[in-house]
Image (cartoon, rainbow, N blue to C red; front, side, top):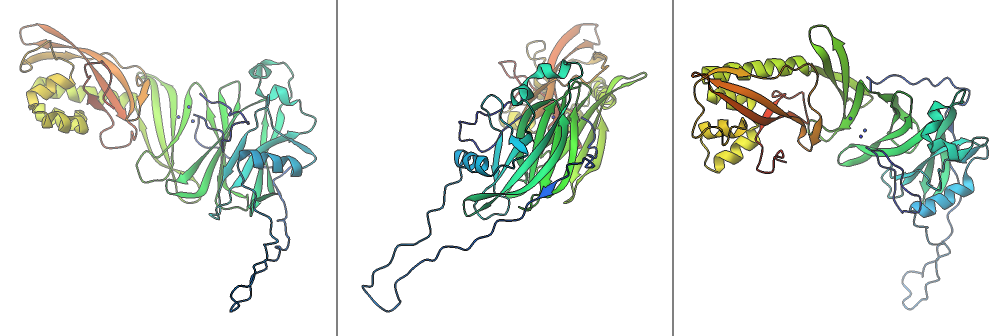
Length: 404
């Protein structure tokens, strides 16, 4: 949900990394050039001579088997260059070669992924964003190539047709499960006029056949995010969509897709603007009624509440700290006549940290004598916005930054 760059091929990195729309959409595979499976290489292992058992002092003949090559990025590039299919050329932009190494079958020998285009394509233009604005510019067919690793030697396993785009951005990978190398989630990103298209493929083994594929589209109104939001060790897909609604403004819808072993399926959905308005209305009611305990329970970040209570703060002091009134009032909040929050017409959560997204909320309190107090605090939408507490107040620390 991501800022995307290519890693120079001279570096011994194993993959490109990138930062992460609409709901996942199916990808057409009816191109004339379909995915191609390649036969696995075969060969007999060299013989190894050993000393006869029971004969001490017998000399051991050296093994006839050559040492296995260490398959790092440079060795992988060398081998790939020797066996690359003749009708394609390996994608390389200004000397940068998108390469990803990942052990799919758990044998300690990583498979290799790279990209290819047809030989007639001018390679240097594929990283040039100005190509998006050239009239009558023909899109380029992109292919993903998967190489099987057999004892340190690569062989071409599969060619996967990705689709047609003008500008390549990045190659990215992430294990779908936190503690398992397989399945592997792979993303290939391309720039478009509207934003970014990300081809998402999931590989379950070293056959090179994706068990799932789709295209995530990031635009001005839609953003996909891949992250483990519920802490179960499995990557989730959250799609954020901005839609104009009458009497609301620009509403933001959040849709959560969970991996079910075969695909990402819709699990939950929530809105942001209407829920935030309801949350602030409930906060106002609690403040006017003086229900401090209720307010702390549903509106304040429990992690920060526990931390501050350990420091000796009582409920009245917690209220002042979380609402950003420290210095404006002394010991406790006076009896209030009104609470004035700004009108929320669109999603205000613009900044992010490891806890989630947040924004500075300024508002006004009016006591029973008509005296006004200006307050400024932080409002957080947690990394998992589908939890029971969708919004939480955070206290501003002395630096004016949110607690991490």
